[in-house]
Length: 227
Ligand SMILES: Nc1ncnc2c1ncn2[C@@H]1O[C@H](COP(=O)(O)OP(=O)(O)OP(=O)(O)O)[C@@H](O)[C@H]1O
Ligand SMILES: [Mg+2]
Image (cartoon, rainbow, N blue to C red; front, side):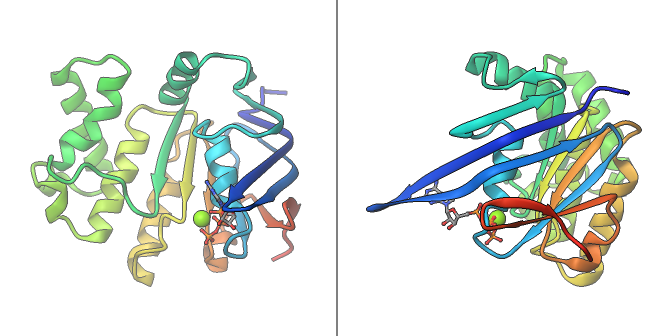
């Protein structure tokens, strides 16, 4: 059997808000195989974004273990974890998280610069990635001038440009109208490369039905969701 991309065991997370501690995740287990597309649904405040941040090594669980491509992410130092994240994961968020004052192609080139590519090569590959999401005509446009749908397509190109083994996406269609949201979902699904895993959080059950696996978070735990 090929190695799991993600192997999450008994992950727990408690957050503190003013006076009280809230246990948002209470022993979450999940796994993701290369090529598998997993969707996470659940009520607002159920812990979906918190879980995705843990899967993306942007936050650490209080208990349990996260293996990313076989590596225990808590057993390595911050620097090694950042490198593993940059080389392995592409992120697409609801709020796009683009750098507004630079162009589309410069935004997409950034992750390549972080992993050591020279400027020319990075811009060249970024232009190719933008072509794949249908934005060749918007390469040099400043991010702040793009529409919401265009911004999300740039964000997808940026997530895919390093050819990551794992894409994590938190409500990528949440800020878009239905038609644009569907286009963005299709682009994500089509462009997730062979063997690349996808974990997407959504409130949209119509979108969730297109995934191989759907998990629901409730009461701090993950269960298979019968849709
Ligand atoms: N850093 C933090 N400090 C305090 N509370 C937090 C923190 N992060 C998350 N929480 C709380 O943890 C709970 C889960 O939050 P989370 O953002 O993971 O939910 P969610 O399922 O993504 O919700 P939504 O669907 O609204 O995005 C919420 O009650 C939230 O207020
Ligand atoms: Mg959320």
